[in-house]
Image (cartoon, rainbow, N blue to C red; front, top):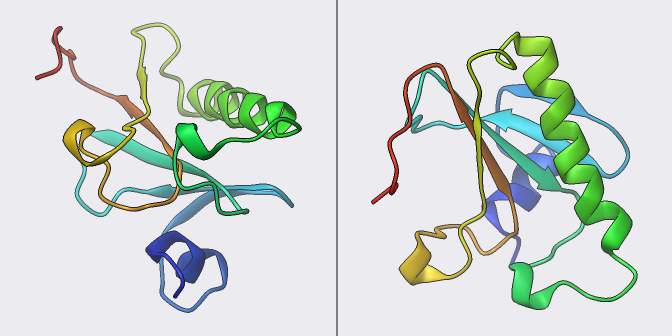
Length: 113
């Protein structure tokens, strides 16, 4: 059974894609928590950080570098942005496929809640 993100990657369901290469895809979140809310997703299935394996360091680092490039493209580097990884149900992970949330466009309070 494919995760929601695998279905998006395979073009089985639509999404607003803002970035894509051979290893990573970034989409607009359908339930945004900030004016800018993107999801940055590896194209291979990694359920969460606990499932990440040796040898995936480059891919995990690429997710962060893609978030930086998107922040530059969106012009949000001056006011800042937040990168979030929810790891597990109690942390708010709804889709069992590792992904980064890029949030910006409003003041983000701390602690997040």
